[in-house]
Structures are given as structure tokens and as C-alpha cells.
Amino acid sequence: MSEINDNNPSTPLSSLSPAEAAQSLFTNSTILAPMVRASTTPLRTLALHHGATLTYTEELIDRSIFPAERIVNSELGTVDYRVPISHYPAKVQKRMMADGDNPDLCEGAVLLRIDPVVERDRLIYQIGTGESGLAIQAVERVVRDVAGVDVNMGCPKKFSVGGGMGSALLSDPKRACDILSTLRRNISKPVSAKIRLLHPTDPRPTLDFVRSLINAGANAITIHGRIVGDESQINARWDTLVEVVKHLKETESGIPVIVNGDLYTHADIREMRRRSGCDGVMLARPALYNMGLFRNEEETDGQARNQDEGVPNDEHEIPLSQFQTAKHSGYYGYTSPLLMSRTAMIQEYVARCVRYRTHSKNAKYVVCEMMNARRAPTSRVTFLDMGLEGGQTIASVCQCRSLEHLVKLWDVRWSIPLPSAAASADGEKSNDNVRGGSIARVAEGMGDLHNYDDRYFLDPEQFQKERVVRSCEKDGKIDLGEDIDEKKSEEEGGDSLPISKRPKLLNERK
Image (cartoon, rainbow, N blue to C red; front, side, top):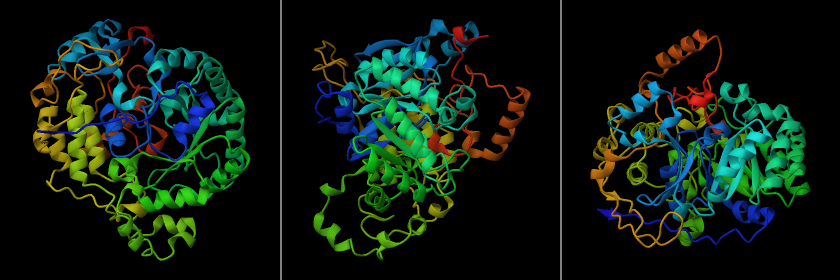
């Protein structure tokens, strides 16, 4: 088996102030967005390997991290935040102990796994919170292992809003600012927020809200180009987004502004940077479509690029709404040589799932998301090449019951090496002599509890109907313990995610 090696060339940020560190992290950045279930260690390190400058964790609710223990995993070379099995009710413990496919669950559930060698100074911890007191308690547990902290202020799902989190903060600037100012006073790393547009056409409400966050101490802002209620199948509101960013860069020049929403081609990224003057771009669904979007175009063949630059018909002069729906051709378009084989991308993702002992159900979920475009804007779908060289189907992925099955289905023939004895997860000398990448280890350790029902992909309409029935049976109440992953990040639009049975903790029971 051949091996893929990751290298982190960045310099430490510890000597910089939060504002200076934010400039270093976000200026000219290309970022993997926080996506529930997806933005775990395999996808984050895959993005970094292919050119992302920064990644976010999936959103983690403040209370979820409280019972977690920080464990230096010398075998994997990672830092794990694991909730001990003793924190779960007896019934749940029994189910975890009986999970033969995931024996690591006998020790508890991994909420967050960080590779400090690959992700040092390139990982942002995104928190879902509605209270400053809870926020600082959660952040203080994790901050030593991340480059910065981001507060989710955009998720429109019932779970977040019902808990006063996510997009609920958009209508409560006083509480939003209290959270940011509390974090700013108490930690020495950058604090940022990810929001949505507050109005479909008028930039002023968004500008007012962003400026209040900056006055409260925000070191950077990410803006998703949709309002609450917008489905992912409609185009992001680029015209309003550009107006907001342009105003911010004129009046708040010292604060990095990152844009997010429907950047499916290098042409999209270049045009958004040119028109808005943004400091960085953030990719979610487009990254799942093709990791080649993170590729640094400056490292490619300049002659080929220059020859092809004139192919688009002055696309940069047309209205943004027209640009969004155009079939971008040429070097930066939908068939750009900068893009990678989607089959190879999924193969590498599966290899990284083996490397980091990812739960097989979570791996299946992400692979299925990579294979379909049903959350992409309708105007884009016909331009996206969803073909796979091996002819794999979502049905064949759903039939897999372990990582080993996924490895065989995708014909994965390489491995990601485990760390050598030269360094431990904390960067110190270690006596462990660990060999890595063995497919034989696949079934021996998958510690997180992300999972889903295969029907989410195979029969989504019936699955959604059943979820509505279950919701009605609950009389509209949301069980925080049972449904901690039922929501998704704001980038995911209006579709509902499958139910995830991340177990309820003892201290969450009523």
C-alpha cells in the first residue's frame, strides 16, 4: 500500500494577539465549513491535504463537552474528548457494550478527535451556545487544542432555535454580544461568529448586527448568503452578500470577513473575492462535491491557465444572478483541471476514516453525501458531474456494515500512516512504537457515535414522513439528549437530517 503524508507548514500563533492571529488565520483563506457529522477528523485532514488553509469542527453544543475527558491517544497520535461510558444511563451502556462493530464504545463516546500534528493552528472549534456562562465553560475545556473559537449564530433548525442557539441569536443581539464579549475577555485566541443574512435584499440589518458583534470583540465574521427559511435548493443571495461585505471592508477594514454559500467552481471563488473584497471563502457542500476546490491555483501550470483565462465570455461583467446560473467553462469552470477525481476523493476519505477509526455509520453518511447533489441549488445540478469511475451506488454503500466493507467497495489500496515514535499527540517524545494504516485494524476501534438510518438516502420521502409522525407524538418537544445531532449546520439549508441516536447523558435526564 502506498501512503499519503500530511504536513503542516504553519508557524505557531501563540506569540500573536487575538486580532493578529485572526488576520493570520483568515486573510486569503479557503476554509472547510462546520458540517454536522461531516466535519470530523477524516474530512478536515482531507481538506487540509488538498489545500484548505483552515477547517472548523462540526458544531458542538456547549453542554455536550462538559462530561468529556481530554485523552492523549498515543496510538492514533490524536487528542480525544471522550465521554466515559459511566455517564450514560444503564440501558444505553448495555447497548454500547453490545456494539460488536464498534468495541471502543465500551470506553465511551468520542465527541471530538484532533490530530495536533496535521491540524495545529489550523482548526477552529465551533460551539453552539445560547448563554455566555455555558459558552466559556465549554471553550475553556477545548481552547488549548484549537486555533480559535467560532460561535454558531446561523443554524435555523428547531433544535438550535429552541435552545436559544443558532439563528435565534440573530434576533437577540444583546445576548449574542454578551457571549462574544465574555469569550473575548477570558481567552487569548481569536473569537469569531458565523451568521446568515438578516434580510433578503437590504444589507442594513446584517451590517448593524455585524457591527454590534465587532464592538463586542469579534475578531472575524463569516456570513452565509441565505436568510433563515431559505432552502438550499435556491441560489444563495449573492447580490446582498456582496453589498454587505463591501460595506464592511470599507468601514471595518481590520476585521476579516469570510463569505459562504454556493461556491461550486474556482470561477465562483475568484468572482466572489473580486466583487466583494472578502478576506476568505468557506466551502461546505461544494467541498463534499470536490475537494479540488481547495487547490491553490497559483501552484498549477501558469501557461495553461493564461491560455484559458479568456474562454469565459466576460462573465465577470454580467450581473451576479446571471453569473450564478451560468455554465462556467474554461480553466476555472465545472470541468477545471484543478478538480480531482471524485472516486479518488472518496477513496482517500475512506482511507482517512480507517486512519482515525471513524464510526462506520458516520463514514457511510459522508460518503453518501459526497455521491449526491440533492442539496445543491437546482440551477447548478445539471452542471455537476456526479459520475464515479467504479460505478458505486448509494444503495451499495448503504449495504456496507463496517469500514472494511467500505474499503473493499471503493477498492482503497493505500493507507494514512499513524504517527511514528518520534512524537506523541502532545508533541512530546513517546516510547510507543506504533505501525499504522492496517486494514486489519478497521473493525477494532471506532469510537464516536455519529450514525444515521440508511433510509435517509434510500427512501427519503418515507423517512421524512416517519420523522414528522414521531415529532407529532412528542407534541413538538425536542429531547436534547436524544436529538443532539438531529439538526445540521446552517450551511445545510432546509432539508432535515436523519435522526442520530447519540445517547442521552445521565445529567441531562429530566
